[in-house]
Length: 206
Image (cartoon, rainbow, N blue to C red; front, side, top):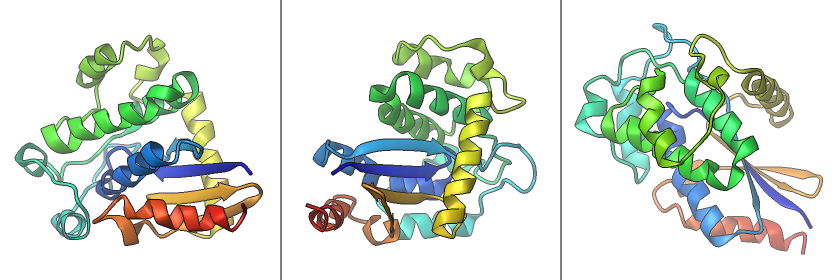
């Protein structure tokens, strides 16, 4: 039996930030489940449409275990641009998969806990140095997605057609040839509770 968890997210999405602890829990407790981190680049252009509302932040805080710093809250309504993070995370998931989840956690901590916009190469340099990453210059092209990131976005579109929703974040459990959409909202307050839910699904195929 082959089991994989697909996490479709955006690094700048508050709901994705709230869902990452669930992915951490799965990674820690179910190492046999292969993780696939797919950045969907929802906030790929810094324009007026890519804004977060105070109501959204309030909902995330009410329904999850994450917090938002004063630095983030002071500019949460600014237009978001996750292009560089999409390029970086797509590269990391392919080239250094054992570090990818820790890297995502670090990026989200910078953004939501420190208010780092993560939209310029200079915003990412400390994290790149911390993880000792040797990253091609094309990854830091903030004007467009890398070819790999763009290809992954198209894969996400195809997968979203299969599951019938474009909502992010999404957690998809693949067991052999079956795909199960997990309701991550049920587990946001207590991330470890998703472990039992996944075990129930795995036991059906044991």
